[in-house]
Image 1 (cartoon, rainbow, N blue to C red):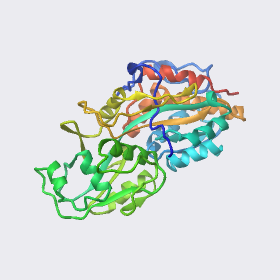
Image 2: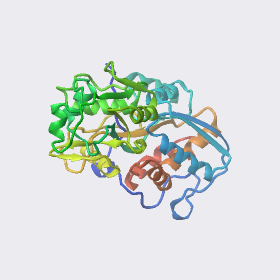
Image 3: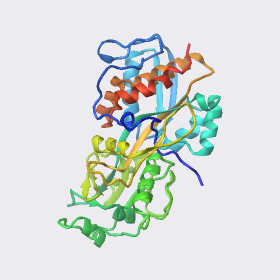
Image 4: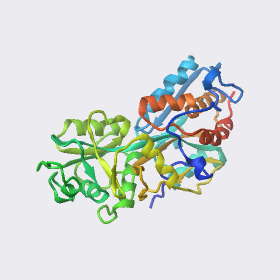
Length: 374
């Protein structure tokens, strides 16, 4: 069985684990190297960096990546960064194999991947995994005449397990007593690629509705049938272009599609940056090895008010050492910008994510400082 570290986190107190829903305070991360100093207002100073940098991974993280790349390249005009939103599984594979300088993933490294990443980086303490992006996974749907869909965990799991087949099923009616539900057949849409979004979504169903969802969490969709699509954008397009369709995607990319409220305790909660970030304080730290590896496991079964539990906390993978020192300097600068107040604010505006707190930034900064560069 593949053992996954679902989410990055911190070996620190719950207060340090908390993610702020608005960036504030001074930036401690330089845009280039440990010798760079922040410009006025917390903006990282431009540096004399030049060259190309490649990354790959999480498609849910794509909107944030584009904001980070644009902001960093504005500060460093001689640097070109390319990020391929191939999916978390592809990002982990490419990073472990050395195909890209950094990777983005919504699910932590499995045991075999962790060993490979440590080897690629030259040892456990040279591997970096930083939580940089927290966002809700929205349950998106396209159903004429239904604007305010509500789903309990068991009903949601029954739909994606293909046990609930029509929109007027008694289970859906029970969750939506005031809605007029058609007899339209349900078409569930899942990711066709190995995906951290899928890993987190199936983890939620496995934790909250084990009687309806009988498979373990997996980055590969475990149920045959339904409709499959490549990447976050593929799922969104398939749901948008279908009829009676339902899928799951990073909330930032849901567009004009319907978004279901999910039952938590006695209330139905809509996805939001604030509700997603609230789950961090409900979760436990993990003991993953490595000085600069920060992971934790989300508590999907919480009944606390104001918490949305279908969440991904996405992170960046990098090394403290690179054969090309100039590339190491760019990685150092880029990660410094990503965790900076400016970088987090850019992602929040472009992707609707919750910026990390000043406390978390302070905790992560030594990992960035440890990256060797020219």
